[in-house]
Length: 53
Image 1 (spheres, rainbow, N blue to C red):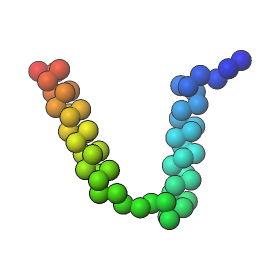
Image 2 (cartoon, rainbow, N blue to C red):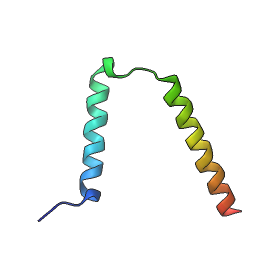
Image 3 (tube, helix red, strand yellow):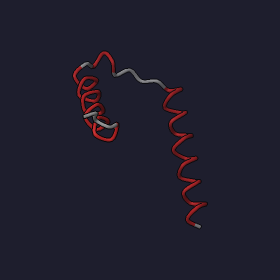
Image 4 (cartoon, helix red, strand yellow):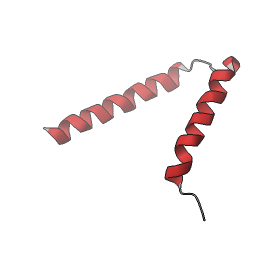
């Protein structure tokens, strides 16, 4: 029986976060990526407001 993505994703995310948290050398700030994430978050929030209005 094959395991679907919905069952694998939470475990994969948990393992990834644990790995990164255990390796500080991988925790490097990236201002360009941070700015891009901020734009995406604002776009999603604006879209949500528009849909709920």
